[in-house]
Image (cartoon, rainbow, N blue to C red; front, side, top):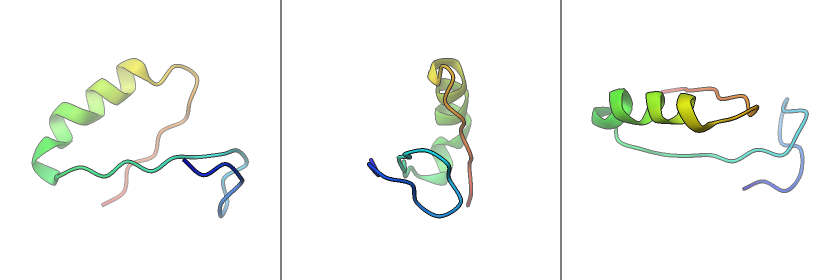
Length: 43
């Protein structure tokens, strides 16, 4: 958890790392549970 603005992000952020093989499992879960948070996925 970054408890300050980092880079272009206008709010605090956090970074999650997971294996590429889990993409199809993690991203739908993230979408279902993110609430009003914005999510961005990069490879």
